[in-house]
Image (cartoon, rainbow, N blue to C red; front, top):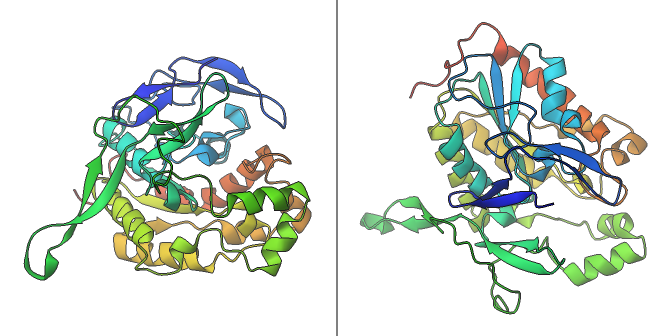
Amino acid sequence: MTLFEYDPDIGYRFVPHLKTRVASPDGGYLVRTNGLGFRSDREFERDDASPRILIFGDSFTAGDGVSNGSRYSDVLETLLPPTEVHNFGLPGSGTDAQFICYAKLAKGAPCRAVVLAVLVENIRRITSPYRPSQDADGKVEFLPKPYFELEREPGRDGGAERLVRHHDPVPREAVTARELEGEDSVDRGGRFPALRRLVRSVGLQGVVQQLVRYQPTPEYDSPDDPAWRLMRAILLAWRAVIQQPVVLMPLPLYQHVEGTADAAAYRRRFAELARDGDFILHDPLDDLLAHDAETRRGFRFKKDVHLTPAGHRAIAQSLAGTLRPLLGGASPGAGKAP
């Protein structure tokens, strides 16, 4: 069963009106999509004035590994009735493609708030023109994706920087690993892949990470890092086109939740961005760390780093407190002036 189809703007979406069971190492799960090609049991009507929240993110938001009703977006509906929560999560996507998704499908639509759920590892995806994928035979190929670069406009002192989109439209044709040899043009899932495979094979990943003070996302260490400057520019551009309140939610990696990596750097960057960019920051890490170690380990699958139903519930319970004040009394289009 093919889950995704080509989209010239975003790169790809779920096949619309899909209802299927997906196999996974920790057990299968049910996927149902709407007419727009996103996982949902309901359609998204642009002009619907019902109280609703829109959420954008990657596979941690889309809900890889769990059925629709177990995702944090769907759990939020049970915590914040009668609000509808529309989930535009897209597995494998970066913040760049998610921004384009909003602009294409949801810009200007009435809602009470927009949640930008940024898995912190996405900072590597936004610097890549390609994304890894598996074809029907299980062979890895690399598909073009939309991406942005910061370019300087002519002028005094080098001119101001502006975001410039590339792969517009997104090419259809995949490329092979051999064609990309020697190019730093795709996110392959982190640093030192061979070392990570060896460590995982002997069951010492958490121990080694603690001993070497593992930093999975060093791009956040400095506000001047090129990848962070690009992420910041994308998020500020996105904020500028949303009239409603925008909740910025950095999603930690399991290493941050389980205490094998230091989260201080990315937390500083997102806090600074929230202050500068008129975002409402919701950092769920403290709420997750309030649980004991055994419970936190249960927030991800045994054979997959994605959130379990328990992990989704924990995110929903954390996020509900930030969203609740945004739902009372305000009109669906209220928020920042255009």
